[in-house]
Image (cartoon, rainbow, N blue to C red):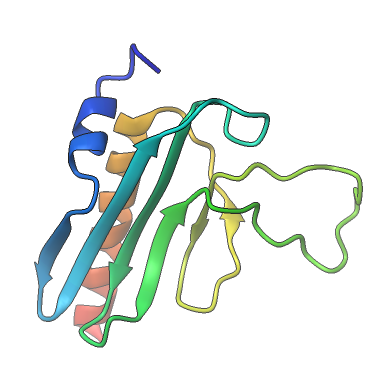
Length: 121
């Protein structure tokens, strides 16, 4: 991960709460770990968007593998730990982690999209 231009930025944001206006806020959690089979890039993270009541409404993380659909065709297949929660009740969908820079870009683009939709409703 040494060649990842966004890694330093992401790690420096660890623990930050970022106001998004209208009561919405983002929390950034990120730290280096020893690479494992489940986390080969050696980065643990949880980037979440919350409403004014503190409820997570969207997020990207790798705390666990996403839940397999009940009718999963390939029962022996492992799902990657990197995933995203598209809404508050989403159990997680796989996220194709490339590097920390792309993670930050994808996350904040999704934050902007979610907030725009909520503003329109």
